[in-house]
Structure formats: structure tokens, C-alpha cells
Amino acid sequence: MPSLQSVISCLSDYDPSALRVDQANTIIRNVLEPVQGIEQLAIRAALDRVLADDVISPIDVPAHDNSAMDGYGFASQAAQDTAGDVVLEVIGTAYAGKAFEGAPTSAQAVRIMTGAVMPNGCDTVVPQELVDIQAGGNQIRFSRDAVRPGDNRRLRGEDLARGQAALSAGRILTPADLGLLASLGVAEIRVRRRLRVAFFSTGNELRSIGEALDPGCVYDSNRYTLHGMLRRLNVDLIDMGVVRDDPDAMEVAFRSACENADAIITSGGVSVGDADYTKQIMAKLGDVTFWKIAMRPGRPMAFGRIGSNGHEAMLFGLPGNPVAVMVTFYNFVRPALHRMMGASAAALPRVRVRSATPIRKRPGRTEYQRGIVAAGPNGELEVRITGQQGSGVLRSMSEANCFIVLGHDQESVEIGDMVEVVLFHGLI
Image 1 (cartoon, one colour):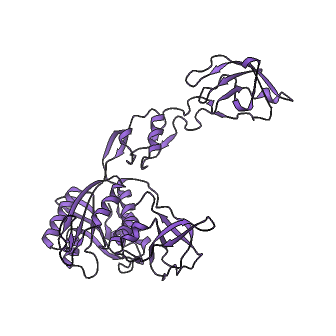
Image 2 (cartoon, rainbow, N blue to C red):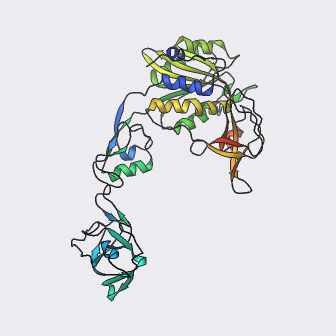
Image 3 (cartoon, rainbow, N blue to C red):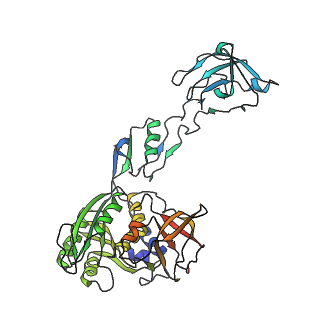
């Protein structure tokens, strides 16, 4: 695993006091590697786990040419050879799970149900609603233009051919993936082990829920938002509570976290003016850098690798303000943890919508305004900010349904301008 300093040394314009968002992500991505460890699980237990190997289809899916709907199977040449309506004799029925055993001639058809194997010689299915049934059900008539050759037939292997990759390593398994695996007859798969993540808050002013609030104290909300965001990633959680501003307590917490987790997330203690020993303990235990990132909210951040008693863990030191914790988590920690999990998850998708409100912005930093996307008067989507955007206003995240992402070089936004948004659906 490359050292943090060796990665940083490759950046010609590296400035820890004014680091761009994309530069920080590049550094983090280049330092991290997936954790080792594989488990074999029944597919019922594999939801949201990271696939360790490519899954190769052992069969053709579907296994045979079959009908895409209820209707009548016949040889398409019969329609091509007829000037007017096509008239065919019905000689039997093909059911799903019970193939028709005969071989109809070009003048014959077979009643066929959805999913049934196509009878020998048949290559087309005419839907039942397009035919006239005659002679007590023994004959059908339909227009030669009702279907084209090959209509309503699903070909053997058109979904997956035997030997084809059905799912790629690194995929985070979805409910649809579990169904696909079951359709291949795959009962168990190999997945990467769960990532272990320890997290705690720092500060003498913090109190846990249920404790009395002394003057100047606040309840610790960051651990609860971190807990919720981490649960969405399906990692093993180690909640270490609140660690007071004390060098000995801090070192004990960091060492314990190192010895039990792959990654450590802290909130508080990395801003200008915070107690120096917090940063000193981080730096004492490993290869850590402290950044002022050109973003709002979420400017201060620590990142690196720390160790204790032969164990190492990646460290993400986040700001203390509640909104800044969430913004830095989604922009830096979430993609980093995906990489450590061995997941090939894509970046959060962005969509462009019109701004319904003016937004002040100065170039030189990336801003993440909290917004609400909704249909405007003309039915098109538009976005407006939630109001006060301070980094301590957690209500702005609760009320919002998106981030409005204003790029590093972007200037102020006027009503009607197009802006990029990241929707919260599935995140918060």
C-alpha cells in the first residue's frame, strides 16, 4: 500500500491549506486498497455485499427458444406465402414446463402459453387477441400483417449465454442480482468480508442522549448521522461514543480503534483553534495529513493511516459541525469506504435542473447548498435552497432532498440558471 506522502509528492500543485475537492479525492483514492478476506454465503444472505469474483453463467438463459406471450406458434413462412389472411389448423397446446412433442407443418399452428418452449418448426407467435378462432377452436385466422417473422419469440441465451459473465467482481449485490443468481441455479457466492468501521466524536462539550445538558454543552448528533450513513453501506460498526479532549483518553481511543477496525471516522478536533494534542495524537500514531479543503461547508479534514500494536487503520478526521460532517462523508468517506470494500460503485449521479432562486457563490471553492427539487409551474423540475445554509444548521439537511453542487470555478447563480444537484434518495 503506497504511503500518503509518496502520493502527495506526485502532485505538483499540492497545497494543504487550499486543497481542491477533486485533488483530495485523488489522493485518497491512490492511497487506499481493498481489504483482504473472502466469505462464501448463501445468496439470501448476500444482499448489499460486494461480489468477490465474476459470476459466469453455467447455462443459457433462457434455456430454450420460448414464447413471450400467450398465442399461437407457427412457421413464419406460412404468412409470407399467403396473399390474404393466414388460416392455420391448431393441432395442440404447448404449456410452460411441458413442451409440445409434435412437429407442426407450415399449414399448422400450436396453441402456446407464455414461457413455453417453441415447438419444432415454429419461429413466430401471433398474440391470441389478434386471431379469430374458428371450427370449434381447431382453426385460426389472422391478417398476414399482424406479425413479422420472429415476433414474440425469446431466443435461447438471449438474456445470458452459457459462459458469459453474468455479474462482475466488485458489484454491490441488489435484489435483482439475487434473482439473477437464482435463475442460474447459483446457491452460494463468494463475497468480500464486511469492512469494520470505528467512529467517535470528540469534545468536552458533547453529551450523549439521556445526559443532562450543562451550560455550554450540546447533545452529540454527529454519531447518529454517521451511524445512519454507515448503515447504508452495510459495514460492521464500532460506536466508541464521545471521547473527551484529553491526550491520554484520545490516544487510548485511537489505539483501540486501530486494533479493531479497518477505518476510523472522527468528528471534531481538526479545525483551526482545536486542541493541538488531538492532531498530535493523530500524527503520532501514523502517516496523517491535515487539510483545509476549498469547499463549503466542510473545510477542515484529516486523512491518513495510523497504527497500534501491529494493526493499521485508515483515518478520516471530519469537522465538528453537523452539516459539514455529512457533506465531507458523502464527498470523501463514502467513496473511500467503497474502495476499501472492493466495490466498483460509481460516483453519486448528478442531474441538471433550473434554479428557482438566486444563489450567491464566489469562485475558488466548491459549495454544497442544501436544496429542494420539485416540479415547477410548467411541470419541469427546479430547485430552491432550503434557507439558512450554516454548517451547524442540521435542519437544512433534514428538510432538503438534494445537494446543489456549485463547482470550484463557478460564480453566483441567477433564477433560471441550470445547476447540478445530487439527489438524497437512497442516501439520507
